[in-house]
Amino acid sequence: MLEETWQHKYIISNGIRLHYVTQGQGPLMLMLHGFPEFWYSWRHQIPEFAKDYNAIALDLRGYNESDKPSEQSAYVMSEFIKDIEGVIRGLGYDRCVLVGHDWGGAIAWCFAYAHPEMVERLIVMNIPHPAKFAEGLQTPQQLLRSWYIFLFQLPWLPELALQAWDYETIDRVFTAMAINKNAFTPADIEAYKNAAAQRGALTAMVNYYRNIVSSLPRQGWDLLDVPTLMIWGEEDKALGKELTYGTQAYVRDFRIRYIPNCSHWVQQEQPELVNQYIREFLAYS
Image (tube, rainbow, N blue to C red; front, side, top):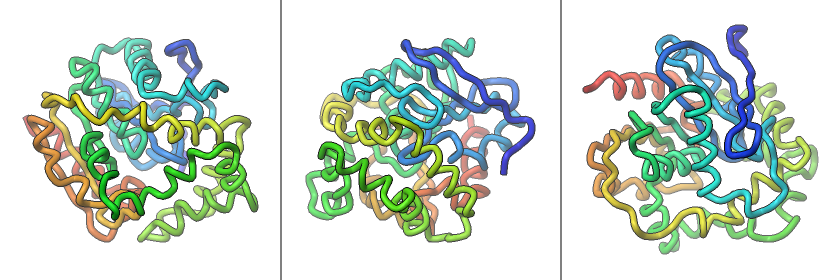
């Protein structure tokens, strides 16, 4: 589902080269993907919001066509925040509508706290507030859901598992978790496999998790003064719905929209509904 008007570009930010796809003109809407994805996870949102925005979907550092620093220490939240700041300013903007899913959502949360003046609106999908996630990891049910985080702490074994049998795990991560099995075509799965197969990508992707303790501090979260929308697919096997409860204690202007019969891959399984909820959120004053 590629659009001829999409453009592939690169930008230097925080000392590395990042790849992005852009369409449209106007205010900046910056979209940040999760694991094990790349800019392509926003293929249903880019053309929709390009009608009113300069819609940009970024390849995070370590992913797809963006640079992949070899040091594990390069994959920490402080560096991710600098990446996003450099992208926004490098594109000639001083603020944006920031949209994130999964790891991209975690980065979006932390960026909004670090630079609230640069975030006009915050939209996060199937990623809890960092404080709620830290709380969740103290419960047996979320620890069981998050088993893969502990696997990813091991050296080299996670990379071998992800690339085994022609990256079958990448396939299963999407197709086995999805409620709507038609959301991912064989071409979509091949795109994700090809992105993961790029030299250095698997280690970079796993390094996000290897540094997760330092990337997501457990305290010091003030009341966020950025209007925030959370969209949550209720059948997320990795992150329990209960992680969303009480988020309003951390955000002054908070809205949440649950989507039933939908997995972690919310913007790909229910793109029309996700786009509708985003538009409604952007329209309210």
